[in-house]
Image (cartoon, rainbow over all chains, first blue to last red; front, top):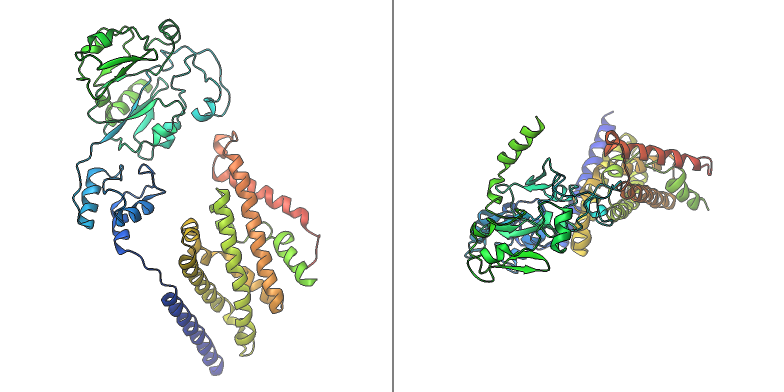
Length: 283
Length: 192
C-alpha cells in the first residue's frame, strides 16, 4: 500500500516536473516578441470586429495602430472617445473626427411604390436583387432586411411600411448596412448633411411618376429654388445635392411635387421616437 | 496490413464523432464554415497523433512497469494539455497566420474528449507503438472528415428554407443525427 502510494506520487510528480520543464524550455525557445501596446490598444477598441475600418478585425487594426501605420481615429465604431484614448496611449495628438450617419435614400415603401411582381425566393435583398424584385421601380428598396442583419449596433430597423429606418442617435457610422445594400440605397453621410433627395430612380419623369408616388421626377424645381447655382443638379433624371456648395436649407423642398427632397428629416429618427411610432401602429 | 485496417477503422467505420459520439462540442461549434472546419481538423489530427505516441510511451514505460495503471486518466490529461500548449507555442512561432485563423479553437483542443478517448482506447486495445500512431492519424482523419462533411452541409443549409422552429441548433442536431445514421452503413465493413 505504502509503495503504491509512493510510486504514484513519484510517477505523477516526475511526469509533472517533466512536462513543466518541457513547457518552460519550449516557451523560452519559442518566445514570440509582442508589442505590449497592441493589447492596450485592443482593450480600448470596441472589439465588435465590425470591419468598418477596413481591417480584418479589431486585433488587426490594433497592430496597425501600434505600428503607427494608420491614424488613431481609424476606428469608426469607437468614435472620438476611443481615438482620444489611443492617442494618449501612443503619445500623439488626435484630430476631431466628424460622425458619419447612414441615410436610407428611398421613401417608396409598400404604400407608395407600385408592385408588379410576386417574389417567392430566398428572403434576402441580395437574392431578390437577382430578379427585379417585387416593386416596379428597379432602383427602390427591396424591403427585406439585409441592412438590419448587417448592423451590429441595433441602429436600424424595418418600419411598418417595409422600409429600413436608421436610428440617428444610435448609428455609429460603420457603413455595414451601406455595404450590405445591393442597390446602394443606403449612403454614408457626415452629420452636417441635412438635405437629401430620397430617391435613386433614374427613369424619365413620366415613368418614375407611374411606378412610385414619391419618386424624383426630375422636374427641376428644387434646382431652381436652391440659392446657389449648382447647389442642386439634375444628373441622369435625378436631383443630386452638391454638398460642397449647397447651403442646405428648407427652400428647395417647398415646391417638390412628390416630396422626395426633404430637409432635416434624419434627426427626427431617434431610437425612442421610431420605436414609439412602431408600437403605436402595431398596437 | 493491420495498421491500415486500424487507420480505416478509426477514420470511417468507428468514426470518433459519428459512431462513438466523442468530440461533439467542436463538431457542432466549429462546423459553421468550411475553412475553419478544415483547419480545426488539421490541428486536432496533429494533436491526436502526438498524443497517441506520448501516451503509449507513458503507459508502457511508466504506468505498466510500476503497476500504477489507475493513474491513466490523470497522466493522459497532463500529457494532452501540455501537448496542446506546446503545439500552440509552436504554431504561434512558426506560422502566425495559422495561429490567428485557429484562434480560440487551438487551446480548446485540450478539452476535446475525442483525444482522451483516443488515448484510452489505444490502451484498452493493447496497440503497439506504430499501431497507436496509425490509430491517432486515423482518428484525426475521421474527425476532420466529419467536420468537413458537416460544414459543407451547414453552408448549404444557410440557403435552405428551414421551418422557423427548426432553425439553428435543432436543424444542426437533426443533420448530425442523419450523418451518424449514414455512417452506420459502414458498420461491419471491418472488424478491428
